[in-house]
Length: 293
Figure 1: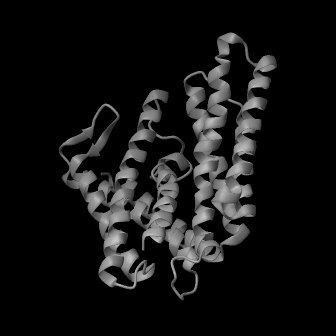
Figure 2 (figure 1 turned 60 degrees about the vertical axis):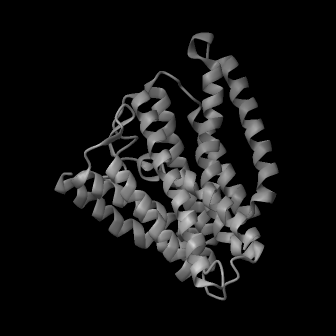
């Protein structure tokens, strides 16, 4: 690991973490607009990966569709109210993309891939990022976790953020200094088994701490810690799969980073590739734990 790269990562974290905390605490439409901005940048990077392989998706359509999904989540605030509208929007988007290929893409431009990837990018980033809003509003709309504390929605959303970024940092540091056995060299040559195990241990530890100390998912501290640790461990697996999926996409596009917006990290896809999957997984786990406990 080069010291300059690590220092750039620290500089981004020094700015990004306070900004993220401020947005989490404020919530509401500020969170929705912030998430919309990130999702729009991410879908542009994903479209650029497709363009690197000669697939010219409808960039403007993808950005508008992504913004529409996230802002729709900010309006409905719950998954159950959002889902029917989101499905309608995605179907409309696929029709529009398919129809647009009649005039702007020929058979040699792979119109089926163009239409499909336009919608996939919207679902991938607009759909998954919408779960940040659902998580932030979950305590208010469902009444769980039953904790009498301020900003419990912000704390609930901070759960996947803390687990993801702690696990990612642990995997990066341990893999850089002590990693020797490659995890999947054909997909991501830099990821190691040692780093992966460190990431799982960090995810489990942070999950225990969040479940017991902050979320208090059960009156019994032991059960609260076990539940939080179990969720953290599942999220740790999802984090590593998400990292590998994005690495595979980049290798197909033959690029090292998805962008250069974040010094030391790359682009939005490079920084949020794992979080994009942990957000909906965390929502599902919280929903299940709330039903069980």
